Each structure stands twice: as structure tokens, then as C-alpha cells.
Image (cartoon, rainbow, N blue to C red; front, side, top):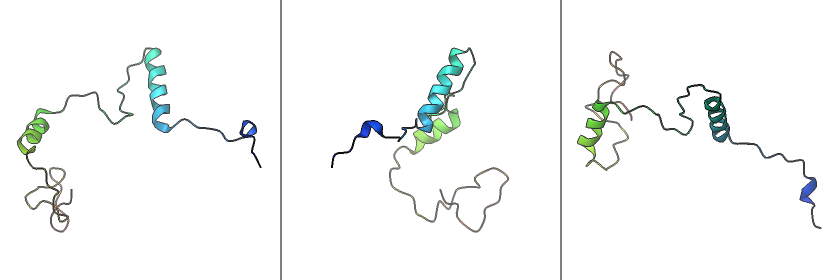
Length: 88
């Protein structure tokens, strides 16, 4: 039996990402300064230290061991390791 979808009460919602984008567009139109990171891209330049590290290691394309990297330091300076190699 055919179903009439025109009478459906199902509502299509805007995705959170697109909703955030619409919010940013409206805020900018209102003259506000917005650093939009809703799509995962920061508008800030990458620190030179990061760029240099990526360039120096671009040739390394293999997956790391699940045990982590033995030579890595703590995730945050001044933070001790917890039980062995740091997992990435």
C-alpha cells in the first residue's frame, strides 16, 4: 500500500556543524569578530616549531607501535609519564 510522505511529521534537522557555520555567518554579518573552527580548521598559523618537526619527519610514513614511542617525553612539559611509553 503506498504511503503519502507529504503528511509526514518527521522533521529534518540541521547538522550541528552546519548550524555552527550559520551562527558564524550571522555573527560576522552583525560585525562580530569570530575565529571559526567549526570545520576543524583553525585560522591561526601553525607554529614554526611544529612546521619544522613535520618537515623533518615527513618521510616517516609507517604506523607507530601500539606501545608508543620510547623516546617521547611527557605530553605536557612538567607532567610525568604514567607507567611506561606514551601512547600516541
